[in-house]
Image (cartoon, rainbow, N blue to C red; front, side, top):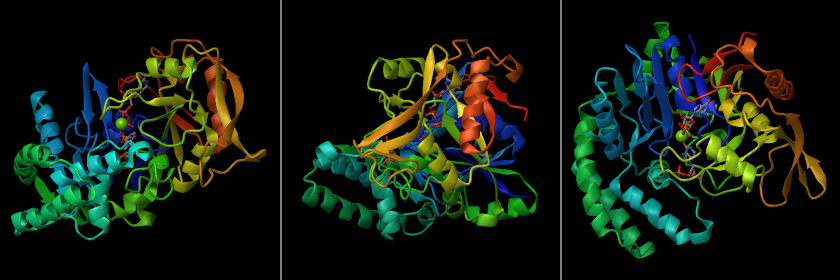
Amino acid sequence: MKVDVLLGLQWGDEGKGKVVDVLTPKYDVITRFQGGPNAGHTLEFNNIKHVLHTIPSGIFRENKINIIGNGVVIDPVVFKNEIESLNKIGFDISKNLFISKKAHLILPTHRLLDAASEQKKGETKIGSTLKGIGPAYKDKIGREGLRVGDLKFNFEEKYSLRVENHKIMLKELFKYDFEKAFNEYEKDWFEGIKVLKSFQIIDSEYMLNQLLSENKTILAEGAQGTLLDIDFGSYPFVTSSNTICAGACTGLGIAPQKIGNVYGIFKAYCTRVGMGPFPTELQNETGDKLRKAGYEYGSTTGRPRRCGWLDMVALKYSVMINGVTELIMMKTDVLDQLETIKICVGYEINGETVNKFPYELNGAVTPIYVELPGWQTDLTKIRHQNEFPEELNNYINFIEDEMGIPVTVVSVGPNREQTIILEK
Ligand code: GDP
Ligand code: IMO
Ligand code: MG
């Protein structure tokens, strides 16, 4: 048995949560391998809309094992809130959720350091989600992090040592006024720790490999997207983890030869939230139309998402880095009204045509577009590919020809039912 991986090919928010929930019946285990509460994964079914931040999106299906892997960073406050809102709608997940001992904790001071660092950067800020992701991963790599497994031994002592150091940084380096916010958050944080400790804390690398040897099927759920990857994204406007397929190996303790299918998810257009380059961005009426039709506002921060055309240069790069085997096209219905749709097939940089994702994506990049006719049909009620308008088939064929891999799923709305599996 192998682990299938599902991940975003753009700048996040491609619709990973929805598709994981749709695919979960095929799997025994769903597991997150990186990121933390910067993620916001939305699921909709039976008139319930739910946003998950730390918990895998398989949690709403019965009798599935959900694992938070070692590569994830956990904020106990966000975790507790997630558990409470699941309990409120009648989901008790205490038996189905397992947490890696080696997952790192986001401390109250990590959030403040995130805010202080962004404030200090001013104009050049990343536009982070302010969830403490960067500082928590910094401490992990700097070998100063605290892990979930540390909750068992001398935790308060280790905690105080880290937090005191952080406070010195906040005071001396950032001149950041943190006392009030810290005191408030720390109280909630320790409440969250109590909730976290009530869950099954495990050696997830052993559990996952054991499950594989028992022929159980496993789906690894990515967070963020390839263009936000710490190594291969639009650095420095990225997140602080490896969002790519290789991240599933390090973030779970799974050997590379045990990776099976790689589902690459992309929107039929493109969005980005936060700062950083975005060659196909539409800062005009069409961009506003896409935002409105796709309700493009951040699931975690509520910020309006920047919108633009589908970028095949970036998509090919993401497919290459991840070894994508199947493409899943999301939010296709958002393009329903458009007379024509553009796709970027190359970049012009200093008078030359470039087909590679460049080291620096700055203002000098001009996208080269092809224009395809729109379908101007309401796709949201369509349930089978036989009903697809010809223009949509052309759009899909164009993408498949360019990418050299099949589009196997087309999503036409936020609900579970609005998902069309293509027969190939
Ligand atoms: P994720 O972070 O990749 O899980 O994506 P988000 O949940 O942050 O953002 C995707 C948004 O699009 C959510 O509000 C989903 O409910 C919604 N969504 C997902 N698939 C579709 C689709 O096919 N059509 C439309 N209109 N909305 C969708
Ligand atoms: P999901 O899993 C979209 C972006 C932030 C910012 C940059 C760094 O829902 O697709 P961070 O807080 O990670 O230090 O922010 O990354 N970002 C996301 N954008 N979707 C996400 O997650 C994101 N997680 C982080 O907006 O630009
Ligand atoms: Mg999201």
